[in-house]
Amino acid sequence: MSYLASPRTYSLASAGSEDPKTIPFWYHNGMSKQLTVRLPDDLVDFIDQRVEHGGAASRAAVVAAAVERERRREIAARDVAILTRSSSPDELDDLADFATHVALDDLT
View 1 (cartoon, one colour):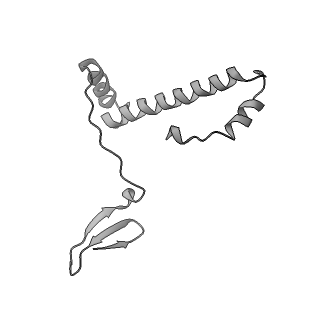
View 2: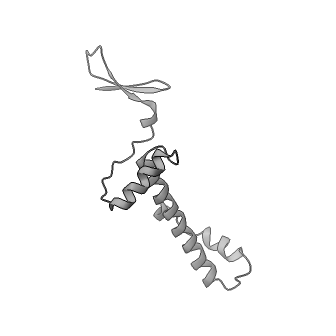
View 3: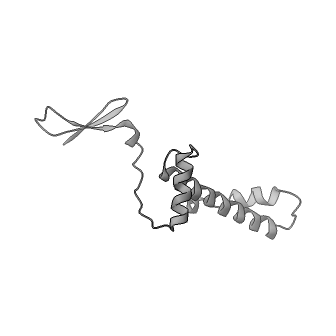
């Protein structure tokens, strides 16, 4: 099996195959992962209303936005904890110095 790259697609071509299956270009950087969750009816109704009234493109978009918001909240809470431990709470120098030595791979 060989991979043939073009600017917008990747093709999977088997030896002797004249009809390769094409993989859309947006999968180049990796696919998203599918997740199944169970939610109470009232939350599903809320999500469906957001989609129905144009507040989101899909159920997945509503859930993704909520998770992204929670991630930002956790980052902010961590920053507050760092500032609270700081010896000079009125200045951000300690936070900047601390941040230069902290790996952020736990946030991805």
